[in-house]
Length: 396
Ligand code: SF4
Ligand code: SF4
Image 1: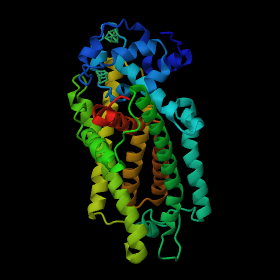
Image 2 (image 1 turned 135 degrees about the vertical axis):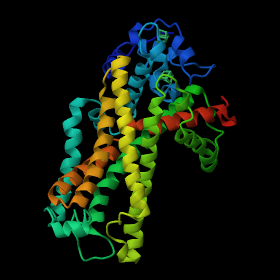
Image 3 (image 1 turned 30 degrees about the horizontal axis):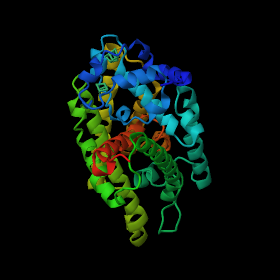
Image 4 (image 1 turned 90 degrees about the vertical axis):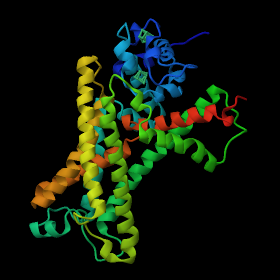
C-alpha cells in the first residue's frame, strides 16, 4: 500500500496533545489494556500507526476513535510513554474541526488564538440586541425585586408575547440552529464515509422509526447510563464528574423547554403565566439542583484534568480547558445571577446575567466544534457500531 502521509495533520495532532505519537513501537499493550476495545478490531494500537503515517481520512472516519472514553488505562500502561489515550483525544479534536461547518467558524474554535473572537461575537450580538430593545439600563431596586431579569430586554404592553422572550429567542434560536445544522452536516458526512469504508449495503435500510428505535435509542440509553464509562479502571473517578454534569444538562434542558412552553404557549392563552418562577416552583427547584450538579461535576472534571496533567504528564490542551471554562462560566454566572437577585443587587446582577447569556450563546453556537461535540459524534459511533452488527450492516 502506498501511504501518502499528511504532514500537516501530524503536526496538528502533536499540537493538540498527541506530541508523543512517534514513540509508539506497536507492542499492542494498549489494545490489551483498553477495557472498551473489541477482539475483532482492537484499538488504539491500529490508530497509533495510522496517526504516525498521517492517515487523516482513515482516522476521522474511524468509529473506534469516538468509542474511546479517554479513561487513560492505555496511557498508564504504555511502556513507551506514547500516551495513546491523548493521541485519540487529539484525533477527535481534529475531527470536530474537520467536520465543522462553516469551516471558518470551526477553525476559529480550534485554538486559543480565536478566543477573543469566540467571546467577542456573542458579546457584540447581545449588546446590539440590548441596544435595539431600547431597554439598555439598570433597573431600580424595586423593579429588580419584582421582575428579576424578566425585563432585561424591556417590556411592552402586548400581553401575548413577552418582549424579553422575543429578544432572547431572536439570538439563542439562530445560534442553536446553526450549531445543530452544522452538527447534522458533520454527522451525515461521517456516517456516509463510515458506511462506505465498511462496505455497507445502501439498498437495504430500515425506516426512520426503526432506525431510531433499534439503533439510536439503545445508544442514547447506554450513554446516559454510562455503561462503558464504568468499565474504565485508571480514572473511574471521571464518571463521578461526567455523570452529574450530563444529568445537569438534561435537567436544564427540561427547565428551558418548560420555560419556553410556559411563556410562549401557555402565556399566550393565560398571560399570568408570564413572569419569573417562584423559588418553590418544581421547575425552579430542578433548575437549582441541576446548577449545583453542574458545578459539582465540572469541579470534579477540573480536578481530574489537573491530576492527569500532573500524574500522567498529559498535555494541557485548548479543547479540554475551553469546554471546562465554558461550562464553569454557565454554572457560575447562572447561580451568581440568582444569588444577586436574592441579595437585591441590580447593577452587579445585570452584569452577571449579561455574561450568563453570553456563555449560553457560546455553548450553543460552538457546540459542534468544541469538545462538547463528543456527545454527538460518540452517539453516532455507538449507533453505527450497533447498525454494523445488525442485519442491515451486511456488506454489499
Ligand atoms: S501506544 Fe504504547 S502500548 Fe500501544 S502499541 Fe504503541 S507502544 Fe505499545
Ligand atoms: S483512553 Fe481508555 S478507552 Fe480510550 S483507548 Fe485508552 S484505554 Fe481505551
